[in-house]
Picture 1 (cartoon, one colour):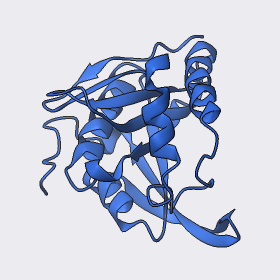
Picture 2: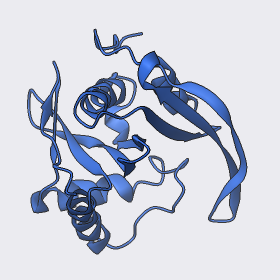
Picture 3: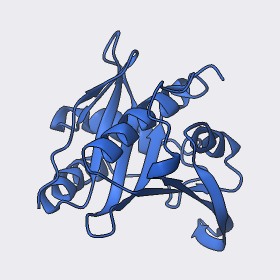
Length: 190
C-alpha cells in the first residue's frame, strides 16, 4: 500500500515531499562532518548520494514503508533539513522517527516543531500506536528534542554503531499513542 508523503505546515515551517531541486541542499547537509558526528554513517563524499536519497524517499512512499519530508523555514523557504517516519508497519501500527538538520538550524526549536507536526500526522492519519526513535548517547540535544515531544527513554543499545572506527551507544526512545500530547505544539523555546 502506497503511503502518500504529506505536505504539512506549522507556525514557522513547511514540511513537504523532496524534489530533485533539493539535491544540492541535501548533499551539503549530509557532507558536513559536524552535523553527522553522531550519525550511524560517515559524511557523504559524492553528490550522487543526494539523488539516491531522494529516489529512496520516493520508493519508501511507493512501498508504503515510510515518509521523509524536507523541512523549510516558511518565511523564506530556506531548506533546514529533513524529518521522517521509517519502517512503518501497518500491522503493528508502528514506525521509527528520524531527523537531520543543518547546524544553522540547531537550537531554534525547528526539530521539535517539525517532528511534532509529523507525529500528529502519524497518530491521526496513519493511526499509529507506537513511534520509536534512537539517539547517540553523546547527542544530548537530540535526546532533549525527543523528551520534549513526550518520548520515554526505554533503554540503551550498547556499542550498536561503529563509524570510522569509533564505537558508540544509542538510547532507544518510545512514544505510545495514549501518552501523545497532540495539542498544543511544544514551545520551541523551552
